[in-house]
Image (tube, rainbow, N blue to C red; front, side):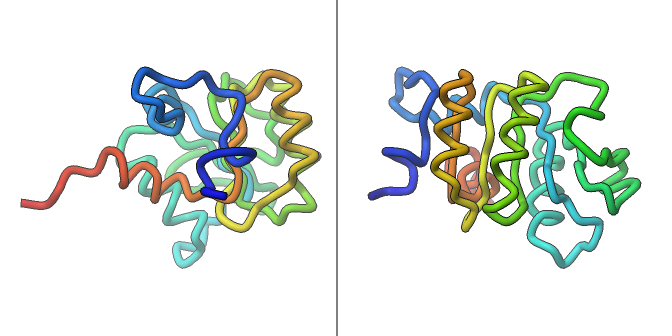
Length: 152
């Protein structure tokens, strides 16, 4: 099964182009990155740095950090004092159910699980609560595929 069909992308209305990922990336403004590390060699840092560089508001969620990429870090999603469009998950799959429950509580629009992060039961719980779900997919790669301008 293609990662961007079936259970991997769901709960989001199809656009006129038939590409829900493009619609998600176009309509998202604020991304809470759960597990964002302040260590620049970590994948979470590179992905968040890229997303920030192309205009997204990044909110770090990691109780071990105080600030990442110039943004205050929060211990939990529920501690964020503003609305969040998307919860991007850089944690092991066994932590996803609690993250999904938090995403539901803060009324996020969706949950994006990075490559290697898969939890079908939590994804179903999120969909049932009205959130769109993307699983086992890198947001940076998907953004570059759709919106990166070719170098001159």
